[in-house]
Image (tube, rainbow, N blue to C red; front, side, top):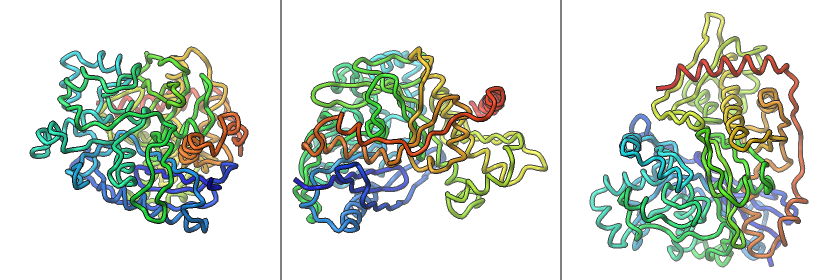
Length: 493
């Protein structure tokens, strides 16, 4: 057996590949950004060929950096941006349209129509999700309606639908495997949470033919072998999960009540809830965390659409910083936010508000406001949104969180992590390995091939780098959250 596991992490703005050793340490990394397409306001698309080519390049790059060959790799794990929707020709593998990204809001009218028909309780009960453009089902329905001839061809079995995991699995196996795992499938509005299978009633409502759908499989298990990348051919693809589920697994959050927050393009707070789904009363989502050895485990999730992407906006949209890492230094030029609050509802508001019509606002500007205040307000918006999610999650579960494990690109920002701890009033724990999304995919793959024996072995590999504890007075945190909620009210609708 090889001495390493390769994890492919296909994200919203970049693709990444990381090689992990048996101790769960990253020994090589490669990353590549790719183009974002915005054909209309509220629409976000990716070129499927970019998703595949960037994934392929980074996979080869990471292996080359570690000076390895395919024989050194025991398994390949795959994790991905979720809900992003693709449709392609089964015979040629050619995409029929650009991928519709999870941030895209083009199906807001369709979701509203379904709500007016009184169908949201049915979708909520069966899928654990809300009727929102965020999810894949209405995006697929849009493609079938708007790509000429697509519905007819789909019904004849000529087309394949997939989220990004399915597209990359198809490409890696040379078109031999059309499958997804339960975690990604649970984000489509089409999967029944309790049966972990496609739901006929929901498919009929959205007019989606069975013939277009991938097979649904456990998250840890051999899906197939690489056959389309000569240097990697023969490696078993044995772990697959949506990015946030993979991060929950990589953080060793395997007991009910354990939670993690990933600070990426968006922010995603997940809490493990055990072997039965918990129905949210606070507009959170119920989702399948993963399925391993025939056991399905569930989680509650809250999603922030714009997390770290607000820093990219400061860089690319306003030109306030040259590099994303510069935001911490700019924000440190001011003592506080100066009363400035930025609500980054660029693509609507996610949980717990679920307002597709919300748009970004900046409040509290005065003549004394400067770039530092705006940078600080942008960073703080990430923590405010995450705090709202945690409070809703605690209410649903009826328990106080003991600690929050954090990961993602923004956790290297010490000021942001400290501010998050001040708002939450619980320890915020940053692990030594912050690339826990890729690590979770590697763990799932390695478990399936025997590279790691069991979860107990994996738990021994997790360790903390730094714990942030609240230092600001509780009264200050309450005041700041109150002002934040006033700003959110102005962004809604």
